[in-house]
Image (cartoon, rainbow, N blue to C red):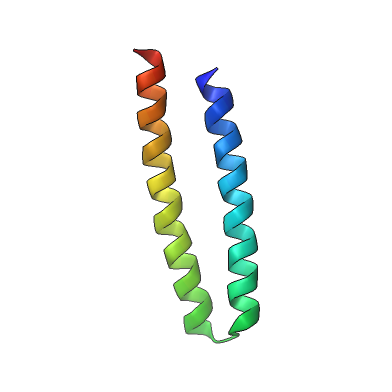
Amino acid sequence: MAWLWIGGLTVVFGTALAVFNWRASEARQTIGGIAGSYAVSAVFALLVCIFALGVMAVFQM
């Protein structure tokens, strides 16, 4: 059950990040702007993964 929640959250956050990256790169076509948005989303995705692992650990207790 925990894996279902983590999978769903990963899909939702991944889709949101993809849309955000597309919008950000469309708004400012500079290399720095695109790289910056991907760096921000990578850090955010890492935080989401840490959160998901924490949730999984709680569910398995």
